[in-house]
Image 1 (cartoon, rainbow, N blue to C red):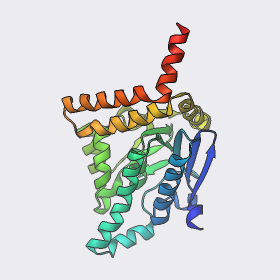
Image 2 (cartoon, helix red, strand yellow):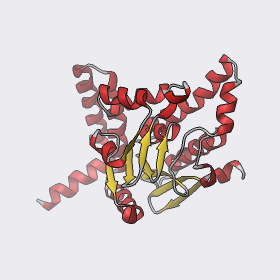
Image 3 (cartoon, helix red, strand yellow):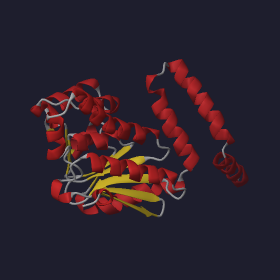
Image 4 (cartoon, rainbow, N blue to C red):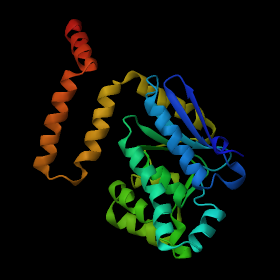
Length: 255
């Protein structure tokens, strides 16, 4: 299977689909898969037709984490090699935050370890009712270190601590309760519900969504006053966009 085949890319209307395509390996992550996800997301962001990108897994599972070859690579690597390898995931997580379009994880089956990290790193998470989430890394002496940065921004401190140090799995319902998942859909309706959810972005202003995403993540480390100042700057930029000017004109015309 070539690098292009381990991650599939397609566009349907305003939706870009990035599909992990190693169902026989439960869509486990390796260098080729991570590179393929990056490639697909960048392509989606550069396509003017695309309003939202969705990451999903072929077969039964979303992603089971690092594959055996990746773990073997870690076991025999030097400090410099391990640092370089870890940075490939860092780059993916940063990319998801930096791209102007929403990145959605559509999770069926299991999202475990790096697979759960990938879902957590996305802007939005949609899950089938039977989906399972977990960070079992501590069971083999590993630490989901970069994922912790994102998880801590999604759930409470104590919930993050429990998820990261107990190594267990939680249901989609529980993941929704603690804020790790946005929406849970019935298994039999999952594909159609996800499509309907994604289609909703076609009705939104592309520039407004991009500015909102940028602002939301920018204010994470700011003081209250700094965040308000950033809001003023974004507000002014939004007012000057073509989308806003057209939207205001339409609103005034209705009155």
